[in-house]
Amino acid sequence: MNVRREGDSFSAEESGEVVGSARQTPDGGVVLELSEPREGVALALLRAVAAARAEEVDAEEAPTSFGSVHLQTDDQGAVVQAVTKLVPRVFRSRTTIVSPPRNGWIAVYDEVADRDPRQLERLGQELSNASGLVVFTIGVEGGKAVHYIALERGRILDEYVSVPDFRGPLPPGDAVALRANPTVVARLTGASAASVRAVARTAASPDELPPPEDLLRELSEVLGLEGTRIRFEDARYVPDAVVVDHE
Image 1 (cartoon, rainbow, N blue to C red):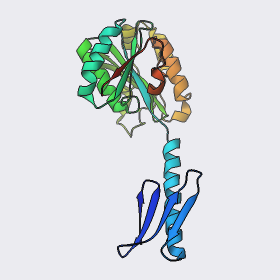
Image 2: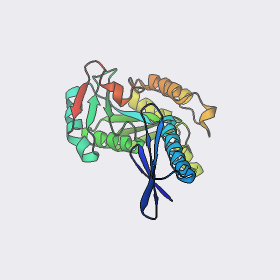
Image 3: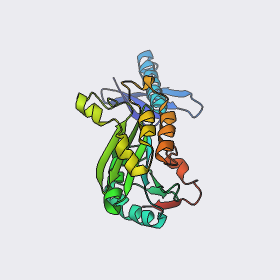
């Protein structure tokens, strides 16, 4: 017997014929329709519905990633122009939001890059390369690790991951390279190297560090970056933010 799913409906087939179906209702119930009363068909359909619901719950509870790009400038108009031109070349995104200048930095929140750390890195590198500015991509990955990349003129100058092995085991040298370089960060941001060293902690497990959003807040305060904990869906409510629609 084969059970197929189409949206909220499930069909049980046997020898190429539909022998029963199940449909989820908005109130959480299930409507069963059988060509003839057969316990095996009913059980197969109910198990398929239960498995689908479990997958949906797991997806809702899965830790999420979020992040933003921060450019060291007060020229919001120039950043809006750069975003308008570059984003469609980097990936398909419907909307990007550009904050007003805050503490000498402008934040960029993108619908795609917000939830995909690799696309966030691409966007930061493209913006830094095109503008020649100092740029930080920063955020939380998988709800477990804080990650930033510092760039200037498109070149990566420093990278930090609070749990270096978060994406998978690394050679010792690569793990060391993902610890913050306080001297470089101090030059780029004006932050105290000692403060950067104290806050940018690393560990083998997220459990050995503060919750990632708390660590992100502490690190952002030291770097002078504002709005790092804002998700894309909330960025449009930042006063004086510019919404750039690409489609």
